[in-house]
Image: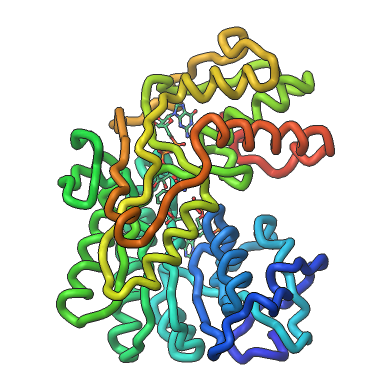
Length: 369
Ligand code: NAP
Ligand code: F7E
């Protein structure tokens, strides 16, 4: 049990504190704000934690108990709990456990809650529809009910998804009808409507962020962008021969994750709660990623990419392209990184990882390929 904070149930075992959490010069003069992030160990959670710490927040990150310590993405943010400026605190919890959520909220009383925790893989949601609904849909109700019952004034960010639009015509914006085509998308749509309902019924400050695909070198290795960029790096190094993929024609609006967590924060700083799309406004196919990523390593994608029908989904979303003009006008949000730069960033990071012998980490896709 942590000796500094009463709700903290994680023993800190890591090293290497970084400037983001010690940078007091950028802290607000007023009382430091407190945020709770569910899903802090995920891609977005790790970037958001960095952003909030750099703004002077005290950040509580809810993590799931597992038999191995799963904090690779936030390891560089570790802080000794005994230092005076101890602002990153990990607590155990699970979106399937309502009583724990209530307990955490009662103790932390966060100014802001970012609900990023989810079973976030669309294909997995077809295999585990019930579990996906429990975490991604009912989990949100648990959180909202706790906030309501405790009478908290916390501002809430809910991670909704462009997958909710399904095959609705593009460009998809806040007023585009939701047409979910997977258990994941249906669960996110339920969460979206629950958040709207609690906003209207109880006056809670809840922002639904409808985010289109956003990627980074921290993207999970079974999502298609990272699967491709890791394979490119390994193939270039002679460690892998082929890359097996499903539907190359699907197109998505791909952005850069650090740009998107900025938008999450901006949504909670707005005067009133609302729903916002975050997207680049460009759509590119999976094949285009292959072309660019292999070319970056001076390889011809046609020689290495093979088809495996196991990666085809029972129902596909063919084309997503977002209209983020509302976020641009009302929040001043704009993505900085464009598609080609994104692919280059990811390929370069994976080539570096392979060069440093860091590509051999635990990887689901080696087991599920
Ligand atoms: P991610 O990398 O898969 O991270 C998901 C996070 O949720 C992880 O920290 C995971 O913990 C946690 N989690 C899973 N099940 C949980 C449970 N039962 N209780 C509490 N936490 C749980 O996802 P991401 O890409 O960062 O996405 C963040 C959020 O945005 C998700 O809600 C996702 O659905 C949504 N979203 C993502 C995108 C995108 O393109 N990245 C677009 C739209 C919406 P473990 O580390 O223990 O697994
Ligand atoms: O698939 C096609 C696949 O799994 C993208 C999540 O963050 O973004 C993500 O969901 C496309 C699909 O992401 C493979 O069929 C082809 O058309 O990288 P993905 P996603 O399903 O778009 C949304 C916005 C979220 O909210 C989600 O949480 O790529 N594809 N071949 C493949 N996809 C995978 N994973 N693996 C393949 O081999």
